[in-house]
Length: 288
Image (cartoon, rainbow, N blue to C red; front, side, top):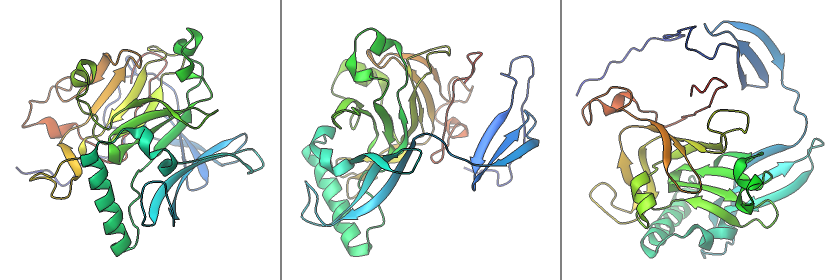
């Protein structure tokens, strides 16, 4: 199958009557650009962080709770406005909470062994998009798992989205690492390489639902197959999905997939495909 090598750049589609018109803020390289709907930069300022900051870093630990070899691990750190560490969380401390089966654990051990030979280049759990849950209808209804101070994160390489209790550090809600254990999970289908998971803000349409960019590509740990000789990245899908999910029932409330985009599956499904750097945002007028 041939693919074009040159794509249009800049603003390619803009319908003022249907768009959520406003400005876009992009932060990068120590500065913030404010852009119009046509992509014109109208203001640039230097970043001046205030309040807490949530950071994710990888760190090599000589010892962990599940491997005799050194482990390249992901660590979440929350700092206050004075850059003092006020909360810290290390993924391997909670290895058993993730619910990997024996086959997946063996694949993770193989990754760690390969890391020990090649110089620890790949963390066993890649964590992205960590944020506070914020005010939501589930906590207001009495579900303590959705405490506004709890943190939600994506772990794309393991096909996981999870919520951490900010009080105990334990996982209190989770999707993945497999999607076959219950009828609700099977109906949802595999999240492969999910990122940018968030509860929709209480002021926006769909408030409280989980919004996630399900990137696709190759991710997960599990059985050895023709597509994965070591059980690493053993799940594959060559297109992306945007999902809005009720986090208590796992029902898909809204989605945007190649089907909704008008692309014939499987031949044209790749036309909706961002296996890296995917993102999603709910806008004030209900657009996504």
